[in-house]
Each structure stands twice: as C-alpha cells, then as structure tokens.
Image 1 (tube, one colour):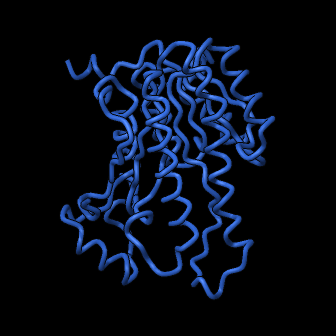
Image 2 (cartoon, helix red, strand yellow):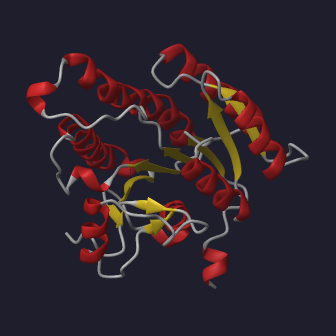
Image 3 (cartoon, rainbow, N blue to C red):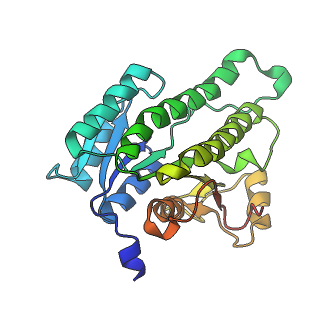
Amino acid sequence: MTERLLDLSGKVALVLGAVGNLGTSITQSLMDHGASVAINYYKGEQEKADRLLERLDPGKSRMLSLFCDVNEEESVRDFMQAVKDRFGRVDILVNLVHNPEFVPKKVTDMDWADWRNHLIAQKGHFLLCKYAIPIMREHQYGRIIYISGGLAVRHMGGSAAFAAVKSGLTAFSKTLAIEEGPNNITVNIVAPGKITSLETDGEFSWNDKEQELLERTPLRRFATQEDVADAVLYFASPLADAMTGQTLYVACGEIML
C-alpha cells in the first residue's frame, strides 16, 4: 500500500537546481516513482544537465532540460510555459537554488554584496512560485517544496545572511500555504543539516566543529543526499496530502524543534 501511495505516475515535477549532487538525487527519486521531471540549468551547466537527462531518461519521454535563470522574470515565465507546452501541467515544484558562494563572515566584516549573494535566492523562489501556481490552480493540485537548511534555526557565527534568507523563505512558505490551501496546493519545507553522500559517509576527516557536531547528533551520522530526497518524496506524494506549512528537518536528530 505504501508503494502505491508513493506513486507519482502522471505527475509533472520541476526541480530547480537539479544539476548539483542533492538535486540529482531528488530528480532521480521523483523519476523512479513515476513522475515526469523538468530541470533547469544555468550558465555553464548545460553539459551536466544533458548528462543527467541521458542517464535518467535516454528515451527523452519523461524528462525535459531547459535553461532558466530563476532571478530573471522572463526566463522563469518562459521556462514554465515550455514545461506546460510539453507536459500539459505542473504538479510539483522543488527549489534548491541558492548561490553556492557562501563565505562565513561576521556581520561587522560584511558589505551589502555579501548579503545580495543570498537575497537573490528570495527573488528566485518568489518568481518560481508566482508562475507555477497559476498552472497548478488549473488542475486544483500542487505540491511546493522548498529546500531550506539547518542554519535557519541552528544559528552559527558567520552565517547571518544565509540564515536570514532561509528563515525569511520559511515565513514566505507558511504564508503561501495559507493562501493556496483552498486550491489544494500544499507548501512545505525540507531543511537538511550537514549532508554527506552514501559513498563517503564516515570517510571524512572531520574538522573540530564537524566532529563536535557529529558527537552531538543522536544517530551519530549526518544525513545523506538520499535521506533528503526521501523527505522530498514524502511531501510530493499522497502520503503528505494533509501536510502544509510544515518543516521537516533531515538532520539525524541534531535539530529537534
């Protein structure tokens, strides 16, 4: 019965930020459970996106790869229209996009450019939701899943801008859940803590802070990419039909709220 409830056949998912390691795991999970998936690539990422497409859908029947700059409104609008033209609908939106250039800095050492690197993630998620939701409303069905992070609630020196943006998008998601609930559109958040991969889990030479964090984590390990993908799958599936405005911390118990 659980397998049936995880069946996403006939659903169309968008994964923004799919070419990274975590995005690839999420995309594969959604594909493995029957969804058709559209992914975006940004400057310099097309080759990675093409390889992912060839690996997961060599027949190109259930997957689409397109350029999309999530911070440019016209680019997002065109991306959504292209997905609708190809698949006829949009059911699931998963957004991982956040500028990877995160250099920890104390507030007194930052300038506005350091903040802007994070703030653009808010604009991108707003635009994605703005253009995906009207398509979801047409079928009175939608599942929006924002990938946040443990630093939104487990605060650490040097992460003020990152934490502020992630916390802000948590508030945005909860507000959106209230607005779109009557349209059968749920909005939820997956917030990983420290992530490893199955291939390397336990093989790192942890620095002092990571080792201390690991020792405080009840399961004595960090979450894998696959663990996070499983949480996304849950929110995307009928198992979570009654869940909206919720945050799932995938952190092996290191974060408990």
